[in-house]
Length: 140
Image (cartoon, rainbow, N blue to C red):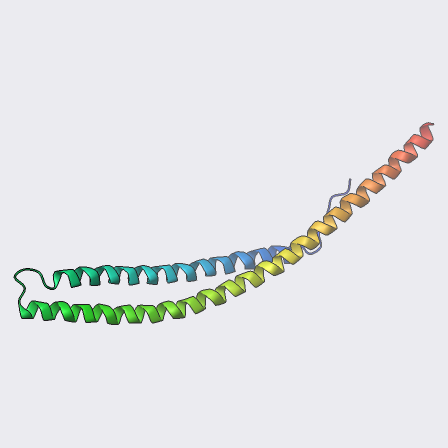
């Protein structure tokens, strides 16, 4: 049986590499988004703790004002992080589109390779059958 040789193997290899690279980029973008979301959650926990400690026993007006200013700063930081998260979501969506396109391109070549390989096996089987039939005819 003749070995199968796919003429577009180099292109397939390049497309697999590109798909892998775009997958890594998508992972990075999603990781950055997750980190931003985690910082937003951390700020929410800090704000809840600050709001709870603001009116504790023995707190003077100066300390209450300090807590209020801290809470305002946390709110501003949260707003900035939410804006960053929205921008990062756009980056993630773009990276996802690029990855899906690279994946589609690789799958096209993979399917072509599978079809060609099946054709090659079918042709080899057909030729082997012919040879066996010829041998049987000669022996009978």
